[in-house]
Amino acid sequence: MDFGRVRKKLANGAYSNLELFEDQGTRPAKRVWSSINVGTEIYVCPTGETAEWTVSDFDVLVPEYVTRDGGGDSESFPKYSHFS
Image 1 (cartoon, rainbow, N blue to C red):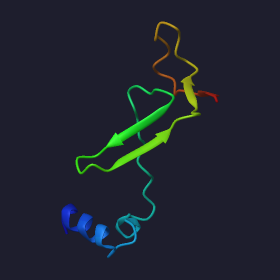
Image 2 (cartoon, one colour):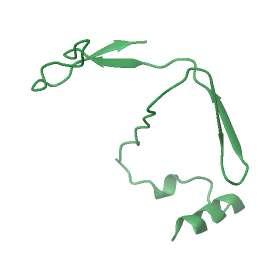
Image 3 (cartoon, rainbow, N blue to C red):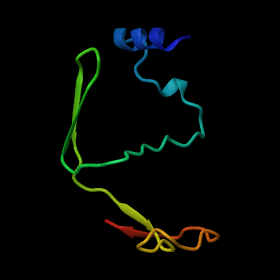
Image 4 (cartoon, rainbow, N blue to C red):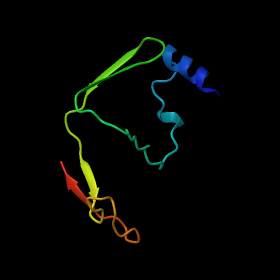
């Protein structure tokens, strides 16, 4: 079944959500933004629907072995410092 058909069925209420398509045991995808701006984010899709959310808090993970100039021991596995 193609994505367009699934989207139409979701819109018509044939599926309550996409959970039935999930592979059990699969880790959720990690979303990475190359730049993040703390504040309100707005997304407008081509059909005119909008989504708005506010980023108010996030965690910063810094590998301990990385130095100010970006160098470090590339052989060691990074150990992360947690700031929130």
